View 1 (cartoon, rainbow, N blue to C red):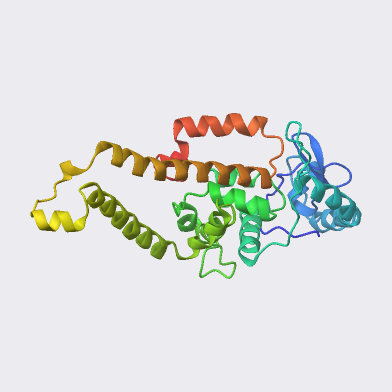
View 2 (view 1 turned 180 degrees about the horizontal axis):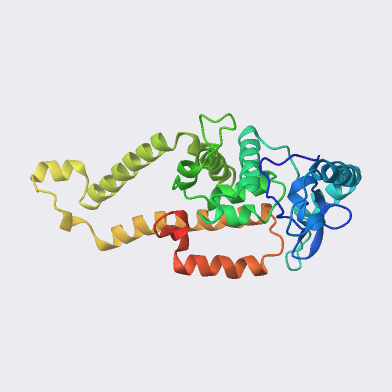
Length: 303
């Protein structure tokens, strides 16, 4: 469905005779523009008074017709895209797997809404890894929302800089929207899946797990001393040196091993379901920013 932008860039966009916006020299199949945003294609560097309405009317008709044509062709393309996004991927010699397409949740839709506004504004383009990834997209489905939410590290710099943040009627709050979806992804991609629901009450879960773990650890220690009754009868004091190194590394090693396994399988499932496209160029850019800690320097993209 054609959607209007929020801001405009005077003389800033290159288009062809079909009013399609060019990206890297190639016309977009679904982004069209008319009016002063593309006036430079007609007027060059100058501006002739009185022709703004004419340019908007003529190219508006062209852009509208092309947008309608693209919208009518969208169902067929969406079906093909759904098959790709659904996960028809061949993993070695294994059979192809399918991940069903589903409707976006309310929180995912909120991420899509604020990202469309941010994609039109782009004031925060260098603040963190979310915004360069955002500019590579024109639409934001559930998989895109999950990916962008996990790129956000909740620094809040974009919120403080945003002219559309509350109390503005657009109510753009990127950190909040991302945090809510990020919490959903923790539960959705958790391994074991039955444990994913515990993220909804993670504070209580952590407290109970710590109490149970400490109780179990102390119980095992007392058992190694011959039982609680024997310790009480002999009056022997208990010291930290009574803990065997073997008991320590076995107990904590099992917990650490489970955590690493759960994280690995969760990330593996997450990466499969977001079905990334061509990432060769993005991989080099991501490696450079990660090695330089670009987005963890002083905020605002290290500015």
